[in-house]
Image 1 (cartoon, rainbow, N blue to C red):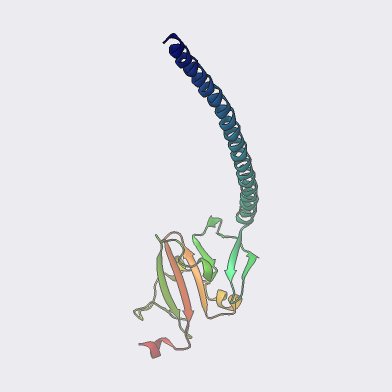
Image 2: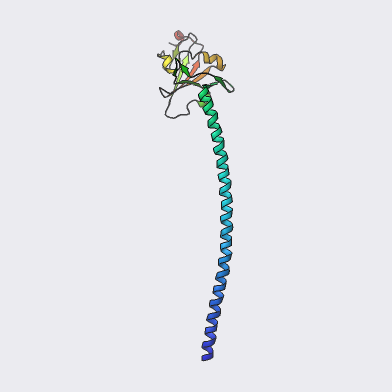
Length: 181
């Protein structure tokens, strides 16, 4: 029996030693795999950070261009085929105006702004969608709005009015006010 007990104890010591050695090698193996994964993720995150830095740099450059454009008073004007940027001061009697001619692709972008269509008749009368003559034109789209038809070479021009929070689409019509009524 002494021999059986000795064999059993030897078996337990051997099994314990085997488990300990296997656990040690497994630990080393999986630590190595984890370290490789961590390094891989660091590389991916570093690439993402570099892309973010590039995008940030591009955004800074765009912001600089926007700042220059805004400070110099450039405003976009719509044409049938492209937006032409002319140097236009957005000031009237040294007071900044809130009426801006805009290209068609910027029309109606802000949801909190109303969208209003007006019709400019051949006899110089401006009417709304109810065929009523529009009053206070200089407050809505500016008194010199008609010149933008010539500049755009089209029959529709667009304005954004920040004071009234409205987009105005002005369409030319070949009819006179008497024909409309």
